Amino acid sequence: MKLRGLYAITPEAPDLVERARQALEGGIALLQYRRKRRDLHEAREVVAVARRHAVPVIINDDFELALEVDAAGAHLGRDDGELAVARARLAGKILGASCYNDAALARKAVSLGADYVAFGAVFASPTKPGAVRAPLSLFSETRLGVPLCAIGGITLDNAPQLIAAGADLLAVISDLFDAPDIARRAAQYRKLFP
Image (cartoon, rainbow, N blue to C red; front, side, top):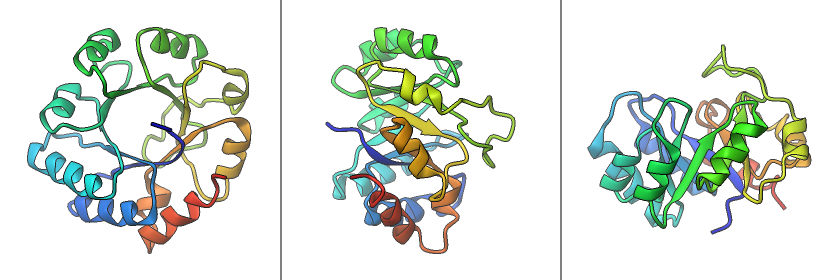
């Protein structure tokens, strides 16, 4: 499976499933289901909708939930459990890892089985205003043999410089899900990837 393109991360919103459906219609490459409070029913719904569009769903922070809803995989941050344990439990599934601004952490994540690594926040982020900043040079200087994902403050305006720097995936929340036409915004991002 080729991991390249717009990586939509669901917002904390009551109409999350409907917003995800619109993003899927716009042609996203990957969808991350992200909720502070676990919601098994909603997660199942998101996976079902994404399946109809043949788009993989990654569950944020909870590889057990990923298994329960038969998602395509899980994404773990520093405090979300051991990558090696998740890799063993998610055999045959996608495993992503947050690596913030740390290339050494990314190398370790790949050695433990991560299928892609995320660096960020690359720009000031409305979702996580206090997040550590990751320089664009990480994308051009880090060669790990897995796709590199950029996250944090990404907009249509600054996305091209991330792709030029070497980002394979652009993880976007606000600029996508706050757009007046979510499907159209997703399609605009899709056109950025040759």
